Length: 539
Image (cartoon, rainbow, N blue to C red; front, side, top):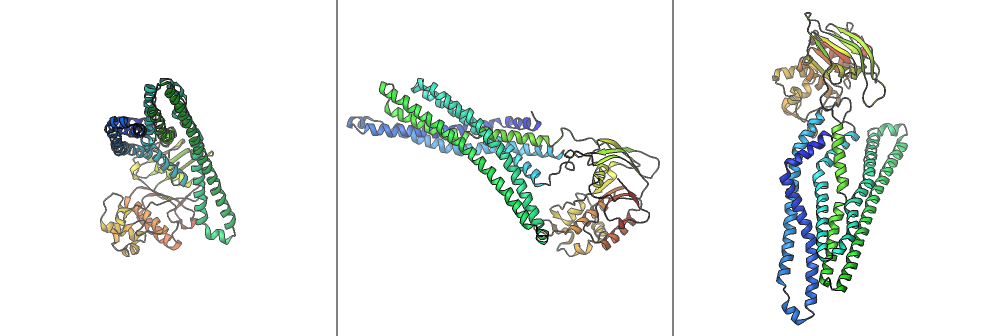
């Protein structure tokens, strides 16, 4: 059993008191509703029969059945309200701990290998979290309520018509076991297919609107629009099939329940003919069966909900290793102050790809200098930087650092993340720096004039709905962060992308003066930014 699945049931067991109370109140609500319909039917029919005779009407006890009906109404109302409070409280208690464990598990996942920035991956994860958190509320409670109600229904029927119990056993088993299994089989697979198709539809729509101007310019808008319409039509067809499958199972469920009503009517009339049963009790048993149908219909999807939640926890658990990957880089102490990086027979392949991105790479970076990776896209520049930073771990070979430590390695990624917070917060990243140091680093990357124009300058809020830097400004913000960290080994992935050439040269000139005694490894397509004494690395 996956670790997250075991953890979910451990948390549920810890909240067993509240969870059991919720289940009890849900059962009371269901039984009170069924009994209310049955007793009301008996009371109405008995009152009607008593009214046919003056003596019977005078001797009929109207108060006790009326009190029972009112009591059942109060019990149903109280049970429904209390069940909502208890089951939701139990759910919130479980998921408050489960989310902490779940996101702790997700934090061990290597997102550089399998990122979550695609719509399909992120939407699948969000959907899985939703299904996992609803396991108790949408699966366990309605399923157990259906089972308990069916058992108590059989016990009630046995009191009045014991011979009817065996006849009802098969249709009840069909409603409680076979139809939920059929619902699971008919609905689950179309739902998964629908999710994939909707994700592709979203990707097609995003691509269409992102490249609208280019598509119009090259007269490719119509084919792309047709493709989007086709993907939408396919998703609609799958959704229709899933809906038809649900309806077919519900129709079958109603047919089985109709058969139960006919069986009760048949045996009830036989009991009435033989004097075994009164007419009012026949009517009561019919209404009792009708009342059970709502519970059986609600519970028919519980097995599918349980399977969705269980598989969701399995998928989330598979995203993450049982333990974090160990750092395979080696750090050697050296009497020489010169930093060196030796790469020997390095190999790395992403899990989702068949071919290796880096294969049998051997090179050496000796001394404090600037090293440029200028290979074309797709040849492993970013991957090598991730390996040097320890964000990826090689499957073969080794990376040996001399005269430095892991905490002295800093990296500026290709995609700079903007945090919802002030400019100061985005620069400091939970570290403490003086205002003078922040303004100096902003001047180095030529963001000082931009920051001065903000309403509250360093305390101005950045992010959606506030001040949103452009792509080039965001790149320079990432450079400013790296400068503040003051590391000995600096890894820069496309640091000048989105920045004009003249400004890039000015910023790099300042950085050369500041980082003259550092090891700087840059991945870039702009080889014209290299200085005469820089070294070029080829993968």
